[in-house]
Structure formats: structure tokens, C-alpha cells
Image (cartoon, rainbow, N blue to C red):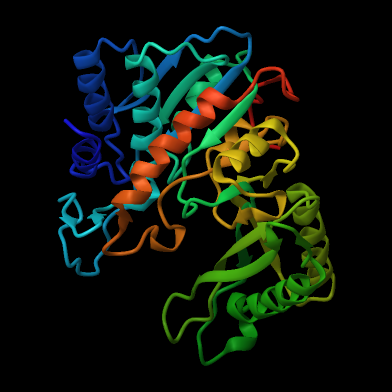
Length: 389
């Protein structure tokens, strides 16, 4: 099976999350390993879900990780020109859910390591390929890996998310909040006998609009932080004063913003609304908490990537989406490169695709990175960091 056919095989597996079923992807990796006598490890997570690992022992004492996720988002309700699980090749592109995000990067990393193994090359660092479950929802695979490998040392981390072959040194943090305003029901014709939670939520949204400006900072190459109210729900029926209104807020952060400090400031603002009788009762709940991560362009990992590309420090980029790096490296203590053949603009879109030549180039890039990353360079030996700050 050639490289393109292997990617097609992965794309034909429905690993939409929920429910995930990532073990079906693991089976494809196992089948490939068994053909080539490549040792592997599987960690079962239950419910047809698993993590998959391959490790090549190096001649040195450093450890380089290649990491990607096996799950995808669902195909959605929009019509696809080519079936989302067909892996169809049209011209220079392969189509399918996960083609960009991120089965192309996942397959390319595995194939690079397989190539090193088959050529009987002993790399300087020990190299591990880690394919995880659940990144699109809760990073259950990355968290399970941490629980099992809390003291395992990782000296550098490569994540194969779609970057359109750009060298990416970090991504924004993501903080999703659910804010609920409470009130008291009454007949719609007698509003003064109730407490209108929807009216009170207007004051909450006004505070968020103000915070959107005061919280906005920029950090190159990640760009600017942002705040957006993305969902709202409230009310019972037209003739009842609503006693509950809930919104969802999507906050994207950049260093040095601290999520707990932002929540503390928001609570203080809402407490003042309560004091001023503009809010009756409220609750703020964290739905998702992923810190930003960033690596200096001067690190050995990034310099190696730039050298392979023939690029310079000013050609380092940031992305807005988050990765499993927020779980594996929440305090940016492990040098991390995000690099993949997919186009991030196509992620989660109908007719998702990846150029075949970009996929083939990615295999060679990952292989060169594994073999040219010198152990005598400026390594930062860091254990995996459990939990989210």
C-alpha cells in the first residue's frame, strides 16, 4: 500500500467525535505495523476508543514526540460534492472528513517514522509517534496518556495540525464560559410581579462588550485576543416572564493573559450589577479551559524546522485554534512545533481536502526533522505537565 492509499484508508474510517470510534483508526495503524514488523503500543480507553504509539529508540538520551489526533468533527448537514468518507482523489487533492484536520498530518508523521524504521536508521533522539483520541471534544486521549506517563520526559513536541506547511510556534488559548442569569416568573401581563432574567442578561452582555475592549491585547505571532457571545437561550413562553437566561461566551487569549484572573474580573463586574439591582442572581461555569502555548523561534526545534524549509525567524506564525499541546504542555515548558500539510481554513468545512503533493512533502519534512534535530543543540529537558493551568 503506497502512502496516498494509506491516507485514503484512514479517511474512509468514520471517526467523527462524538462518539469517536478512534480504535478503528488504531486498527489501520496496527495492520500497517504488523506488515512491517514495526513494534507498537495500544492503550484502550473503552467504548471502541484508544491511543496508539510507536517508539524508535535513539542513540542519544533526548526524546522527540510527534503527536496527532485520530478523531474528526462530524461531516455536518451541508451537502458534499464527494462523499465525506470516500477518500476520493480528484486531480492533486484527496477529499474527505479529516483530510486537513488532521489525518493527513497524522498519516505523514507515522509514515516518516515507518520510513526511518524500514531503512534501519538509528536517529539521535528517541522518537515517539502518539495518535490520540478525543481532541475535538475533551482531549480524553491526551489526558489518559498523561495519567499513564506523568514522569515521562519529552524534550520537544511536534503536532501535525493543519498549518498549510507553515512553521507555527504557538496558538491562542480558549476559555469557554456559560453565564446564567436567574429571575422570577410572573404572568406576561404583570411583569412587575416577576424578575426578568432576559432583561438582566442584557446588562451582562453590555459588561462583556466593555471587557472585550479592556481585555484585548496582541502578541505576535498569535495575533489579538477576543471575546464573543456565541449562544443565548432563555424564556418559557410568550406570556411568562423568564426566570432564566443563559449565554455561552468564547474567549480567545494570548500570553500573558491568565484565565482565572479573567474569570475573577468578570465575577467582580457581575457582583456590581447585583449590587446595583441590574442582576438578580447569576452563575459562571467553565465549559472549556485551554491555555495558549508559544515557543521561542530561537529554540532548537523551531530552528531545525526553519532550516529544513530554508526559512528565517520572521517566517514563524501562530494559529487561532487550540491543540492537544494545551494538555501535554500547558505551561509552554516543552518546545512545541505545529506543522501539517492541511489548510486550517478547510478544517470542519464540507468538501475538506488536502493536496497530495503537500502530503508527500510533509512526510519528507517530518523525516528530516527527526534525523537532523541534533542532540547537542539547546535542548530544554522537560517532564510532561499534567493538568491545565
